[in-house]
Image 1 (cartoon, helix red, strand yellow):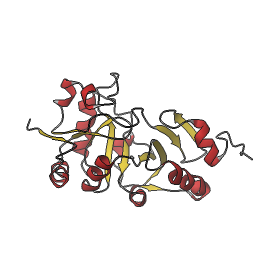
Image 2 (cartoon, helix red, strand yellow):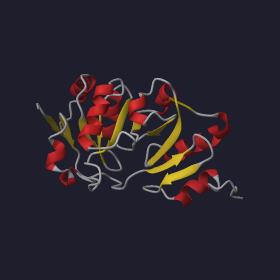
Image 3 (cartoon, helix red, strand yellow):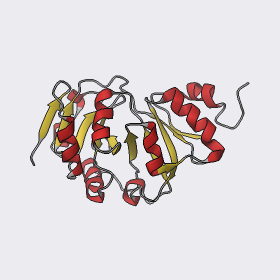
Image 4 (cartoon, helix red, strand yellow):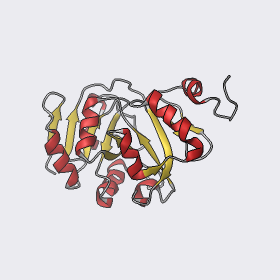
Length: 216
C-alpha cells in the first residue's frame, strides 16, 4: 500500500484532498483524539474505515465539518430544537461536542447503520479544518484505533498495525483536548449519549436541564 506521511509543518492540503477523493483513508489529528476518515461520497471508502477498525457496521460514524454552513448538506435542524441547537453550536463549536440530528437522504446508509440520524461535529484544530475543507467540507470520521483498543490522543499512541491500514498519515503531535467528544442527541428530546470533553453541567448552563426542567 502506497503511503503518504506529513507532519504539521509540511502538510500538502491540496494533495490530501485529491487522495481522499480517490477513496484513500487518512489518519489525522483533531482537537479531541486522532481520527481515521474517508470521503463521504464513497461507500467503498466508508467500508474501508469499518474494515480498518474491525468495527461492527451497527456502530455509526460521525461527520466532521469544516464550517457550520455544511450542516444543511446532510442534516435537518428541527424547528422544535432549533434555538437550543444554535445555542450549543455557538457555545461549543468549534470544539468537543458532537450533535446528533435527523439526516438527509444523501447521507450513506452504511455509515449510520441504516438509521435516521447522523452525528456532526466541528473540531477546534486548524489542521483538521483544512483537511476537512479539502475533502469537501464533510469527512466521515471515527477514532483511529482498532475497536476495543485505546483511543489515541497523540501520534505516538497510534498502533503501528493500524497505521498500515490507511494511505495518508498526518503527524500533528498531541491532541489539545485529548478526550473524546461529548455526544448529545438533538434529533428529538435532548439526550446525552456520551460524556467526554464537555460536561453535562456546562451543556445545561446553555440549554437548561436535559430532563426538560429549565434552569432559572
